Length: 187
Length: 169
Image (cartoon, rainbow over the protein chains, first blue to last red):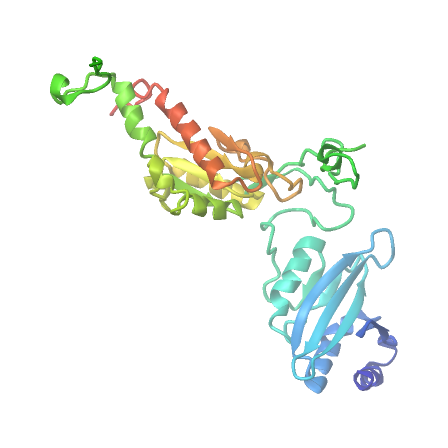
């Protein structure tokens, strides 16, 4: 693993952070998000990270940069994993697509766009994958209310805020009866 | 020797003729041949399948003819979570069913949104289509669905069938 990381740092210099190892998992932080496709291409071509396990996104609401996108890579030949984290600012809110490296990135990136609103430059079909086209919000952002927001799109779909009755509904650990334990609105 | 008192229909006496109300006959036909449209949307659909299999056998109540075309169905069993994205499709399929038609909301999700208090889930299918019977449970056991079917049959048998028939032309 060290060889790959040092090679990566030699290739991309300051943009790639020193690796952090935790429980046999290696994480590097890429400071310049615009390099992500190049870094992924390098790792795939030179070290055989041929399997994009997942792309996920995190909303650090209230911090700057606000978003973080996490790439999980795996080499099926050597069974090594590497994780790449990239920060994305709220204003630009975009990253280069890695579809040219792994075709499987297609739906991962569409899901991130749908739920978090991060756009991927160079994606051939960047439209919503879970919600419908024209839904105006990005539901997994932290400033989106749990109950949802009202929307209306005639002949396609509508949404109404869910009744939380003072919730959120959480179960409470207790040695009392299930009536005390079960999820219900608690203020 | 005790005298045996005949009750009900006896062909020897009645001569193959039954006198009754047209409403009762129509409702009798309808309630014993409800053709369900299985709107299986989530795990409740598994229990719906179990209800139609041999152990529970929904055929005992005449509702075994699952029709995957809404035009041939008169009972929609909404089994599962109705998302907003699916909601209008459910309504469209319901609109394509011929009258008379009934709806069973099977399970907590179809009835109220269930545990999904969320931006994506319709909070009860009765927001878009009229529901006749709600079934509690997450998911309900097949017996609960059969009970709902019997309840619905009771409702069907008291409807004014003749008065609500559509006049031709």
